[in-house]
Image 1 (cartoon, helix red, strand yellow):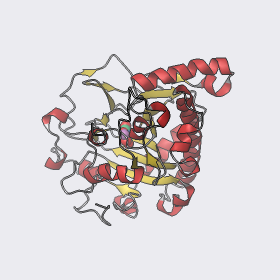
Image 2 (cartoon, protein in one colour; image 1 turned 90 degrees about the vertical axis):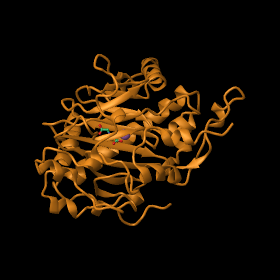
Image 3 (tube, helix red, strand yellow; image 1 turned 180 degrees about the horizontal axis):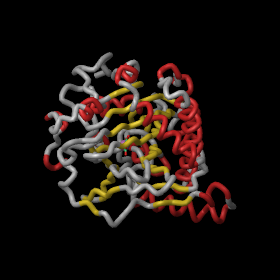
Image 4 (cartoon, protein in one colour; image 1 turned 45 degrees about the vertical axis):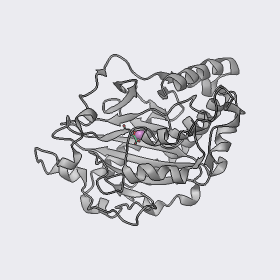
Length: 357
Ligand code: OGA
Ligand code: NI
């Protein structure tokens, strides 16, 4: 099924629900028991790895190797890590979060001018899956296209606050460079040519999308989620989240681990397309967001995605007779349709792509 041209159910802004001050959340936001925040044991003593990129960016080959090894271990064991000294100025990181917080604090009429539809998702939205009855989460968002540049349309980006467009542009430009460095490091760590991953995912036509997530205060945070468990469908995600705002949790075995962002860190996680291309050597990891009764939260995600038409399949170099191709080839355009239909559903989709044997 293609994405419909408009939402199939009336859109309710979670921010408006939160501002109404009602003590109970509507039933569509109530999760089954096993998905609720308190169901699985949560470990508070561990955090995802924090990797200092200073030597990678500024140093000679020997020092770079040590950092690349840390990245290799983090990719194999976690699929989720934070980077510090990544070369992006602290001031820009702060501004990128602040302009989007200001956007969500504008009057509802202003935001409604950017209301999105499932055709492109670009704009102000309050649900991911378009299907009737898809899971609803306690968040609103703003989604926009950055790459390839023919999809970038400033007119669809908020015009207020005044610096939003320039700050978003500068931030996205910096993250694009960091993403290319990461793809190079991953390629080398996997024993591939250094430009392998970038090329396989579409080279100059690689996609880049941004989503500012807004998680309003929630009167019954134990019953719902800000974002249900999912793995990111694309290549790689870079997430900006204030060090004082907890909420993101990563699944490790059967435990949910709360991510504690380091100051000025950027959180990096592997998406499904890397799991497919590396034939499962690197895995995308399930994550979710819990909400808070007296604190809102804004996060800002940059998703690297394959070129829509590129056929993504396990790299021939990583397929052996002992480890045959685990996944069937599929274009990203087709792959992405599943999360856009049903909303976030753990790793259901990737599992269903497994080759029959
Ligand atoms: C996402 C996501 C996490 C967060 O946007 O895909 O997982 O903390 N966001 O907002
Ligand atoms: Ni995600």
